[in-house]
Length: 459
Image (cartoon, rainbow, N blue to C red; front, side, top):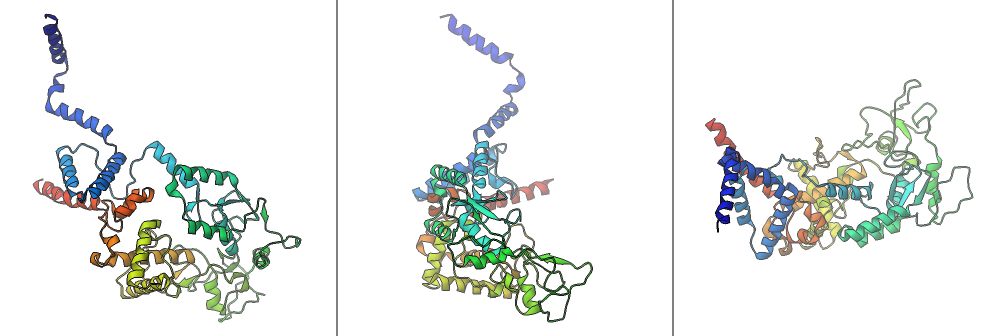
């Protein structure tokens, strides 16, 4: 019986022998704050937020009570790591080493042309790899590698990369490309054999090609880059203003499509107004009436108003299949039963709004030059971005009560367009609407604004 009081006495003595500061409220708060970040890393906190929103949605509530309790807990203990909405806008979320490794792995398995996982990949002699279908289309425009700009003379199927992609899809089935996408790539792919596909030199004529049109396509690449252009002295291309390049210090640009030089002249269309890609077709049309035959049928510059739009681009809504398919249903129900006619109507509506000054399409996230002029010269890639932005602009202008029930009945995701869960969790993407603002960030800004104002006024 005497051992119990002795143990209590030892415990009391040990607690009394500790530092006096450990018993103060400030020290207790310090201990609590030092442990809190270990329990709630920012990435897990955000994942928990999205999980709680999913469960709240299934229970029939909008999750606002969870937000309020979460905000109250943050007010009571401000030292806890803030959610990503509290961070500086644009700052990347903190990610674990395994997440970074998975992201890096998937990025290494993406084709730089279609920005998606490789399908039937082929490697060029410069060692860069692309989807067989993507390179088959690109090689019709230019023999240069899109990455390093080296002239490619052969391409070979890369079965090692294909095996890595297949293994990645087994681990992440949601990353598999759609059947229509794969069928389109396979239809365009001319590199389906097991050996090298060689682009012959001009003096070799014993190669046989299955495609009858391939010989005409090869003629483009048999022509080496000229040392002079059609407007140099001795050139055969006529000029409306009788222009000829000077014999000394003549400045030329190289077309990114046909790799041929053409004069660098101020006041003439020579590059894309958005990305700066150099293309010669618009210059030759302006000065000679039509481009030389070696550039016909390749990527060209046109005013935005001259492009046709007959589909909802793949890049719409950051390539979200769910939101893009829902937009197609909305267009077919309210604009036209033909998606081609509906897309054309949306594109014309956006162009009219640009003319009126009520719409500006941001083709690149961090670009300082939005599309504010329908006469802006665009290349093929940039007009795809412009048309995708036009679709998003049109969708955001539709009042909620005019949306189809399967669209309007979904509650908004807390993180809106900035949510990354929609791309790795199809159920989350279907359950919540992501064509909206970041509600978390908006609430955080509104709640911190008055507090900041009161603190500054009291100071």
